[in-house]
Image (cartoon, rainbow, N blue to C red; front, side):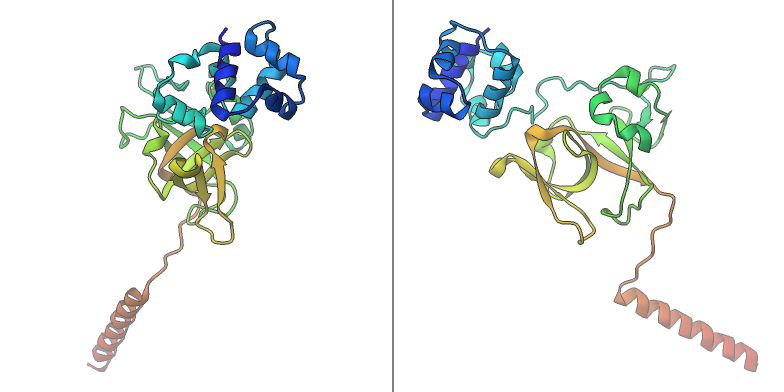
Length: 266
């Protein structure tokens, strides 16, 4: 394992002394020094401490040789991002197929959504979900359907289902894109997403209902992103007319009344 050498590189890059790191993590200096020098191997509790402190994943800390990282990879680590933003690594995405080996759209029910963050990559979880086809969608992309709860995203109402397209490269998400965001802490949420990765390694999630405040979610806390494609609703959205539409409607109504009066008189 490369843990010791990686810890030393991370500490020096942050310009910390061994004593400063040990104090921040409530470790003795000798214990921390032993981990860096390879005299002792950290247990899982210590690895979690190092992962949180240096903002790197445990997997990278244990498996990668940080001496071989490129400048761009170090830049990402310096920003505190350990998620695979560009999707250059294989994202684990389990998918159901029909008898012709064509991908199906899984429908995550309200009941099943509670366990989605732990079951999203588990075939046993997905195979019990209802599935269907939407023939007008592209066959070379992956879709999934999620339930919508609450009133934060009108005109999509409570009880609707949103169909999302799987996003491999999170850097490609443009400002103001409606997305299903699967987060570690909040589960499945449907929001308008603003990409703030370049400035603070986060996405801003906004509601179309102004009553709800926007909030930030760090990229490291996101499991999946699905771009909005369409939605299935139990209600017909209310029609809202602007000033021109109202004026035209009144003119048409007046004309119809005038024609009706002329017809009666004749």
